[in-house]
Amino acid sequence: MEGLMKLLCLVGVVVLVLGIHGVESAGECGRGTTPDNEAFKLAPCANAASDEDANVSQSCCAQVKKLGQNPACLCAVMLSNVAKMSGANPEIAVTIPKRCNIATRPIGYKCGPYTLP
Image (cartoon, rainbow, N blue to C red):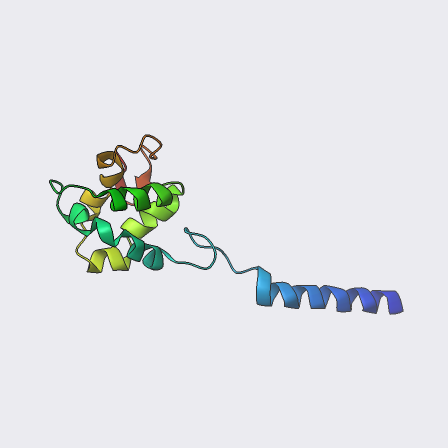
């Protein structure tokens, strides 16, 4: 009986520790950040995300290439509240990886109702 009580106490402590520290889910962009936070990094893309004829800057392409390594994060950022408030048009924003000529872009990846070209 004493062994069972020790086991139950140990299980209780493990559940408590995991509940406090370890079981928070990582979002699309990973632990410790959000799509809205990541969207601020795409400030150099503001014009290109609202005007399909605008030139895409090298700094924009560099940031998109980094985020594009995680297509779910890239999509979440392009559809984020910060992107919307900045005036970005999601239909145009999803074309930026192609406009940057990023060879490793996630072609065909679905970003909500949009598909990355």
